[in-house]
Image (tube, rainbow, N blue to C red):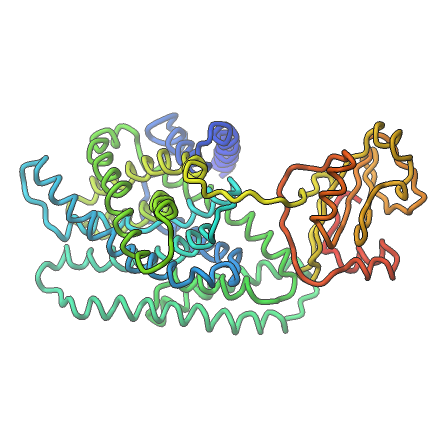
Length: 529
């Protein structure tokens, strides 16, 4: 056991260091997790010999459950409401079109290349495992690169990727049955079964999540640390209940996360932070596990088929389905091109391909390696070029927002909707304007609420003397006026984008009550004091 834990710890640290190098060169973090698993597995250093596909499938299923739930929690209804119809169409019709187009092209190309006829059901099955846009990849890349896309493109892509895995899963399961049973399948019952699974999955996720939020707010646990664990149990409960009522569990947990994340419940901020860390942990475990399964030498024979299928999906099937699905909507040509490019593959296709192995379908081993190769190609080509493609298509929106404080680790309660930033005092500022806080050129409705000096924090007053190197935390109701004032006066502030929060002001409260009492009452947490 101790040896296993040692290797697991080394593997995790190696993955994190690989991610640091990958980030420098623009390589997706998840791809580095995958490569690290391959390096330590049978095809590399042989430190961990792992070939249990059923265990890998279980790990992947639990990981996808948490990732989809967390993705739903981080998505705001207000963001996806304007693009909800587009997202649903892409997640359903778009996935089906991608699978059908890819399947028929695969059949034509491979019949010509191999000189023999492949069954259309087998080709559609292979295409279905890769038809969806992988949620883990999209959430990870878009959020780690912090792309601020125009015209609600980001919520559209995230909502599509979060809700389209169920369709690919149902198609994969259905086609496995068709391939194994042949002509004995009744296609009318297959279509009905797909509809039932989607409807029941959506309903069960919505209803159970609503009941869970109501129960959570009445739970009244003394230990606040247990609330995130309670929400995790709710995630797993939604996943399981959906399965037992005949719904699709992946759709259920995404919708459940969406409902819970957009509801008010006790210790919500701490819970969301807990799931952010948990999501990265499960992504690391999932991609490392999938990397351990594959030996590079086994992938070599699939390079040509993998390239052919990847080209078909990236340049033909995905764009065709996107342009057809979005034809009724007012989307520019450039936007459709970018949406087509974000057809990322990731863990979900590999997990679906493992289902072929466990079901013992004809040619499952080769199909698994092809899916793995296509995933690598997708992450390498599409994953590394998302930000570049967005810039080339002029789809990145420039924002004038104040910066996120670096020296003040704080979190706001949801009802605090002002904006914070941080400034650093220099000797030149002191010589030009004076050495007291009251001498700072700050506009109305802006306060200095905390000072960091030499690793110590304190709440200042107007008579507080400033020194070279002091970091000041500001809170304001009018970020535009504050930015113009700071720029005009030459005072520097951080260039990191902040989360702009909009609602009622807290400045009046701070004026009428002592600053430290107000901060303790209304700010969720201030670390470092």
